[in-house]
Image 1: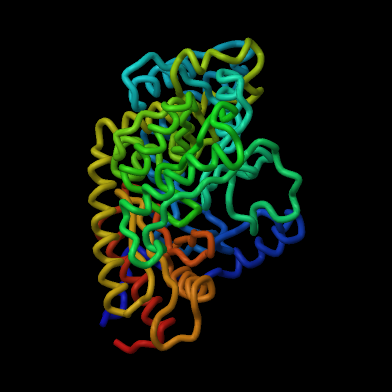
Image 2: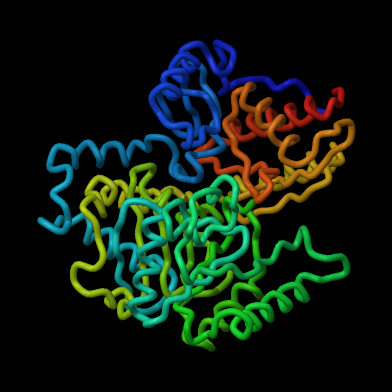
Length: 453
């Protein structure tokens, strides 16, 4: 069994949350709608690398990374310095009024580093959902078709169109209908829940055939503009498809003249151990959406794709007042530089191997009924049930997360049933910090399951 965690990076001066955070949370309840979800009741004072210090002076290890936004860590010095320099020049002249070089330089860079040996162009926006909306607009304009297919358990945002493409009803969609028309769901492989006796290859083939049948039963292929896919489902529970399945979807798109949109908003910028997750599957999308870790936490998103597709909209049909913020562009250029010069992709794979190994050990040690899976540093543990507790699924994971949080580690759940512990730690986390955080997770699981050392 585990030993008591010897805290080094974690420094707790109060109970979690502390009195100052509790007081601020009361102000939050008074002044802010209840709708925005809060994974913790903490208020941050400072963030550095993989550590956060709250307003009560407690220092915690961050394994949530702002839901995958901080692959380069909190306040990377290179990014902070570049932003300070940019702030002294101009904040936002609006690209539609007066253009600025960082926008062009970042577009040029993304055109170079994204998959595909062909001419590309890049559009910048504000958020992941906005990138998805614009990718769909561009696909519809280029193809002259209307229907968009997304996958079961997929998540693409909270705006009307992106919410329509999202699969989980509660909390994302309940009560917000009617939804955008001409959006449809198709099946995505979930090998941990495959019917008994069905191999991975057989499941892939069965689901690909269901897509073919969808064109007969629901919408003809010649009316489908695009299929949008997360290469690894994020909110859906870090569900990883096979290369065969992703390549099969690409083949179907090619067969019927359908565009393939890769939603790399959570998987992108190194989370899976490659700059973009689609590289694992040796599939080149027609359009790719990016956001989250593109700029170390600054709000910016991008759509990159084949030049002829990106040029389909007329002048004035895409864009936005704050789209492509100069601060976001400058930050993103520095983040890319960090990946190129500081070995962050290699670090992501090392982190992922450490977490995957430890989660498998924990699953076996505590006889947890569930699954451990991941790609690169995008790793999760799904929990259905465990010995010595009547709790199952969401309730069990909820209690474990509360224990973890109180012990000084920030981590989040995921999955259609909220029964998945997911890790999205910054890549700049040290080995010692990662080991300490994983010790805390194991100690919390041990306590919730009522097992003694």
